Image (tube, rainbow, N blue to C red; front, side, top):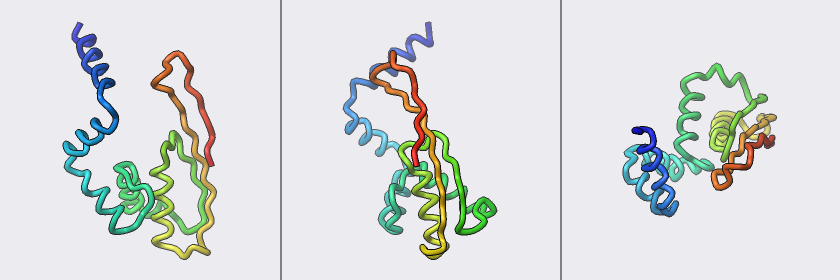
Length: 125
């Protein structure tokens, strides 16, 4: 019974316009300014909270990147913030001519507007 009440409350969130919901969540998130400042001060592409998290991982674990030549696989890489963070990380440490990369992303697409349609895996490069 309690679970059904939660589901009903969550379904009411669908009544909000996406712009109104985004405005609400941005006001409630105290870390929102971090992404905004990074985007404006570093001129990095597509800075999101996911971008910041991945960039922090790269900075804390430098052994993950052994040089400007790399291959990487990104699962569920939508909309692309991890790849953008990785690109910015490499470009901020190596000359553009040095960097050689081969990236593959795989995403599982689920259409929330058509729950009858099965999920699909697609390969992105």
